[in-house]
Image (cartoon, rainbow, N blue to C red; front, side, top):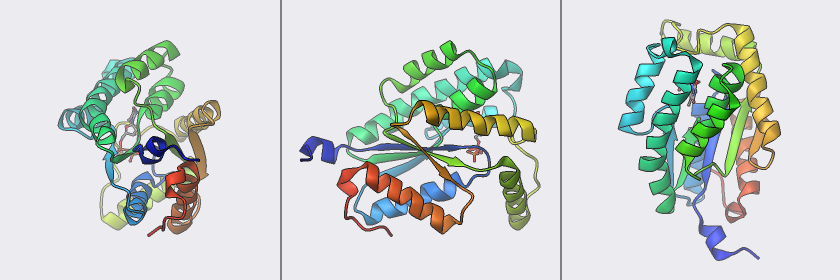
Length: 228
Ligand code: TYD
């Protein structure tokens, strides 16, 4: 039997993965599917989500934090996260709205920790401080060979008529991105109850369906509810 409070508790879902794996599209599609299943949900992203965290985002992505080193950048991401949790994530969950975030704490662990070499003790301390108990109920890790992801990013830039400049992390080399991929997979292996790895090397429609089956299997309150 489902406990009534369990059934109605708002859920927190995060999407993680390397560059160009198609997270943003899938976050939007999940929101549409949840709306169709009569679930009230908000979409957010990291770094960002609140005015203060968006200010930290532009500082970092413009490359202005690079000289701080990975440890300094981990602290900056955590400062943005602390505000994001306090001002957006916790209040929405408390109000009964599901929260879907494009990246969250696993990105700090993967980019700055496992790939950037920041000591695990600092990563754990920052997680404890910034999350304050508000960890995700489910993390969807979108996995893709970085060689394929790079081609997709380049193709998208051509289609959008944009120059492929590369922000703070997009300009790292392919070996770095391979280590990043391994880092996310290691996090998923260490957290099997929370993380599900899904191959992003499939069509957007097939990926959307795979994500919906994971989400609806994880949360019993979605059983029998329709997808868009
Ligand atoms: P963004 O343009 O949102 O990239 P993506 O579309 O791949 O999510 O830029 C966010 C960048 O910041 C991305 O390169 C990942 C990186 N990042 C970290 O290094 N640590 C973090 O904790 C977070 C949240 C993001």
